[in-house]
Image (tube, rainbow, N blue to C red; front, side, top):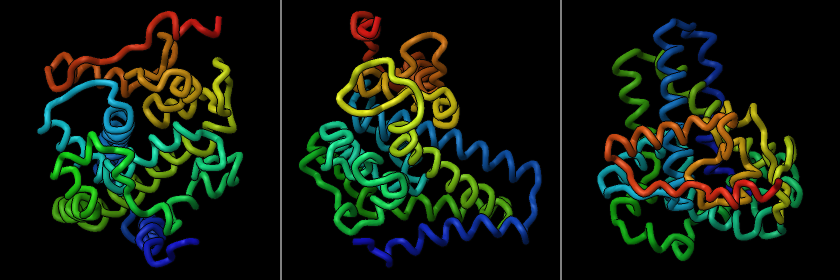
Length: 266
């Protein structure tokens, strides 16, 4: 059952994009939109996904919270909710219990419908006990509209409604649909290198849009790797960014894919 009340902000976010007809565009607004897309996508892919969901590297408590806040600015709910659903997805990928499988529930439901359901709104803390022990993450998960709201205020203060429309509306909608495409398109379009139990696929174009997440068949073959582009020609910008953060001492103990696992398809 859809929770229509909670769908209203999501619908309004899309309506906000039409504000471009009134506010127009400018190079600063366009660059703000692109910059916020890249920074928040990195926080989602590098931390919401590869760190909170799969623990593919380690970091300190301060950095953990800071990147959780940036990820939360994407308006994709809190880190515990995101990680709990993703861990469940890996346990039941493309089975009936996988709430966003396009094969089980159809393309629309896998892309956008599943999170509008009332039964998927609650965070199942039993799936993320390692994260639930941090009160600051639980606070961020409970009040998951604070960070996006502060972002809107900051954009309005620096560039008025034009920055809000481009930097939050258009950028956030593009970010959402690119992320959701991994649930829907990455299980229907692309090539399969590894014979996984699901229908995950690799897609160069999805990898470009999502900074590396499009190598989805690789990821389902070995979810514990910090990199999803297993080979040098598979562009994985998130991985490159995480390597830089490790050089700076912000993160550590990056878990690479073992050669025997990577070459299993050969």
